[in-house]
Amino acid sequence: MNIKAVAKLAQVSTATVSRTMNRSARVSPETAERVLRAIESLNFHPDTNARALGSGRSNLYGLIISDITNPFFPELVKSFEDIAVRHLQEVLVSNTNYEPERMKICVQHMLQRRVDGVAIMTSEMDDHLIEGFRRLNIPMVFLDSGAAAPGVSCIRIDYSAGVDAAMHHLIKLGHRRIAFLSGPMSLASAQVRSKAFMESAARDHLENSPQLIQEGNHQMDGGHAAMQRVLSAPIRPTAVLASNDLTAIGAMGAITEAGLRVPEDISVVGFDDIDISAFLTPSLTTVSLPRAQIAAAAFHALFREETSRNSQTVQGEEHIIQPALVIRSSSGPAPRRRR
Image (cartoon, rainbow, N blue to C red; front, side, top):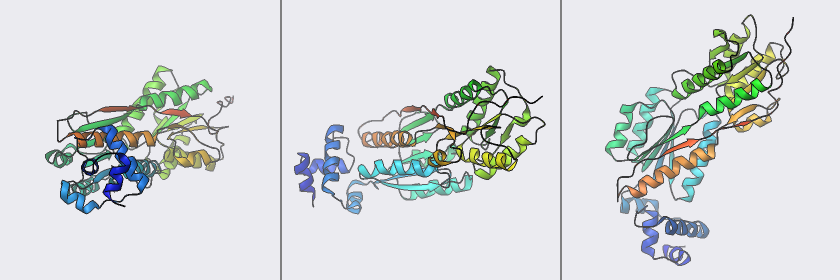
């Protein structure tokens, strides 16, 4: 199979096929989509090395994530890569493990490989680390940090709306003493979720105690330890909201070990809706963050900025992602108070 067959099927010239593969701004989005469909239909595999030499592009997007062991991120990576494959783009994934030193190494790898764009799906990026991308005019898209600017787009998750939906659900079930297990407070996203919880609790005049708010590490062990601290309080909560699903799973383990039941004694609500959440016993009520939507917004922001940067300076976009509450078996009516 060769480029002529692709051109014939797409009803364009071979030059248009080449321009499409090299992300030329001279090709309209409609024509580019038709060429890409023809490439996929014919299972055409262009010589990426030759393309890179001819165009000066690496045909490689960088994707920086926080924690590859958290199921939220592999699901995000898969969705991003699925779109990239359809657009003849490869993906270089780097995992920071929430560590500043590893973040520096991730950025260095991206610059060494001359990525055509980078999606930074973590909130712990320091400003000075992105100067290398700016100097090389590499498009960027951030999750939960930064501001839209020329060549820079942002994806923001409405965490407050997600927390409010979870709290409204629990309050409607009669819960007035609700604990919150946060993520590491060094992370901007964890700070936003914690702030949203406290505002919601104050607005609805819920019972307040410093011991009801405990910091975790966004891992199961951190959720387990944080829940144990909550349970050591003189009066235990009737419900707990966790900053992510792994924290919620750890909390459920601690509740069970204490001889209590979920949700009969304590209701549990998570955040993320990772795939395993639906298959726990009991299945986890959680706030769903649409990974496919986040990945699509990130990829298309890079693709748009990259294909347009040769002809004009493109102002980045801001995308707002709305979470949704998924009600399952881990949340139920508040138990009656014992005399």
